[in-house]
Image (cartoon, rainbow, N blue to C red; front, side):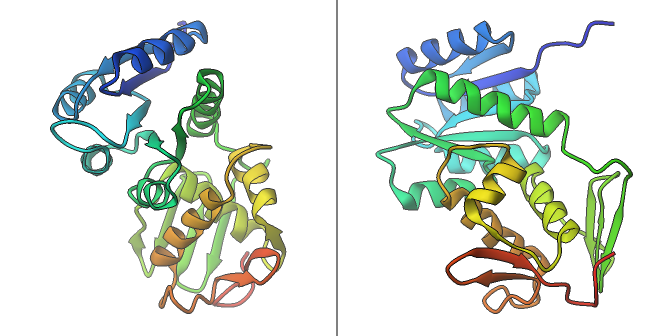
Length: 236
């Protein structure tokens, strides 16, 4: 049986932007639907069940942040947020809502198409070691085969990127990684804003640390980046 093409929902109230993005994604062999406002995006999402959503932050009817929250409440869908003017607060807000990536307007349609392919690759074929592993660090358990992480027996609600980042860090305890190294190893990008890594680390800390303001597992190495320090003994 032939594998179906990945489904992408493009949500933008500018028809020119939507049309250009759709043409580039169609060219890459993807199945694309469009929506022009927040309520329409949610209707299309329920009917279409896309694998990835390209979602503008500023939408009529319902903004992109709320649309993203509602989509991610019912499914682990990948989201690329479109933000205007490159405002850091918008980027951080989009990533904090659960977006896997963001692209600032104005953007290159080719770059966006490459970002879409990158996120889809990570969603469909997450990087795993040759043999599935279960890492135990005190009350934190990370099962790379099942792609499940639990803390004190409670399953953590992690996005695709958050799980990949956590799995990479627990697999390599004690090693300090620069943000650009994490971007390459976890995201598979040789380009991109390092704040993507910063926000994902912040979100992971909120889920795996007793006190995210004073992290003990995912620690900052000043002037370098981040290191995973096992909390309950050496992770294995």
